[in-house]
Image (cartoon, rainbow, N blue to C red):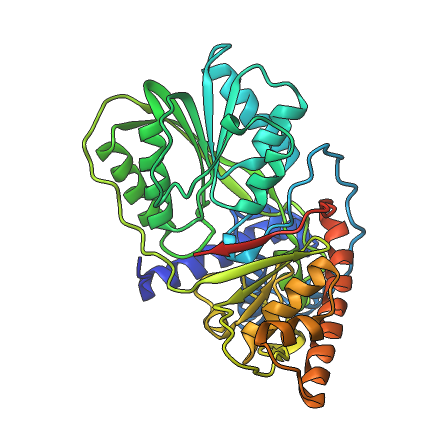
Amino acid sequence: MTITQAETEMFEGAVDSGVLDALASGVGSFDRLVASLPGVYPSTVLHSLQRLESTQKISAKVWTALVKSAQEMREPLNDSYHQIRLPIPHPLDYDWRFSDSTVQHLLNECTALTRRGDAIALLGTPSLLRMGIEQSYPRQLILLEANRTVTDIFAQTIPAPQVFRCDVMRDTLPHLTAKAVVLDPPWYPEHIQSFLWAACQLCKIGGYLLISMPPVGTRPGMEREWANTLDWAQQIGLTLVKLELATLSYVTPPFELNGLRAEGLLAVSREWRRSDLAVFSRTHQTKVPRPTVQQQQDFWQEEVLGGVRFRVRKPNLSSFADPSLMSIVPGDVLQSVSRRDSHRQLADVWTSGNRIFACRGRGVLWQILRAMAVGRSPVETVASTLEYPLSLVQAELVSHTTDRIANIISTEQKENLLFGEQHNNIRQSLATG
């Protein structure tokens, strides 16, 4: 959906008004200011403060105090323990996880809408299945999840029929019927429509869909997007039952936390991101065709090392090329988490900590990562794959890159401890579309 200039101007005006109202009500710190707004991204709040200071709508003293409070490092929260440790989210998956309080709220909602023995389908919400297992939840929970790193974790713990590796936007859906469906699609119109269509195919007539929706402060044009979503819901046989504003919260993943810190925003709450909960009932059958979602053109391979997830774009290997990781952005951490950021097209290597790099020798780099994952010599592995011995210069490039990767792993492991998901001791080599 194209955002118009008028929508952008209206959005900025609404954010500025919200900031002024919050300051007038006594909000005095940056993290509380962000929390008071309807899902406005922290850097957008910072830009609003800049506009307001430059037009003298707030004083330089207030501006300075708020910026200072945004730059004060906060102590990490003590995350609750989980028996099942999910993999660290990767930015290419649009993977944000609900907070424990939100998971409990959604499970409670499902309990109220269903009866014992009913099936509840979960679309892209692994944290609900995890808590359901840990609590012996009195309903049948069935997860549909596209990410193999996630599904493999559950495969070690629970019977296969409860988990389907399935991209609900493109793959053939499993044959199941649920009384309720909980879905958390990426916050873009085509994803939301596709998830809703898939949820309808899985939900009984008279059943319920619970969907996390982006709040009005997410970006310009959200009122239009919500109106379009309601129109689509009616077309596919859904009726809105209720809408709870800003009721769902997410735990900021390491990639977003790093992006905010790269902007100098250190004091943002770990659960600043909130969404609206929309509950629909499936009232009637329709024959609306499945929406088409454009397939990502890029092909990425993934290797997990010590819990740190490395994605490499099209790692083909026909001859030796320099595998060095080349900087694209200052500090190597991408400040944005939006798919609209132009730097995304430059990335050949992307970590779960939102570090991006260019790399000419992606095939060689892939062999280095695979060798490190199984404890083999990267130099010997690359030579064996190419079927000829490496020159001294080539061996040095491989060794230098190996050291660089080891340093990245060490750094991101420390960052991941703040997220509370310690790495699982499994190795994954994955292909993603």
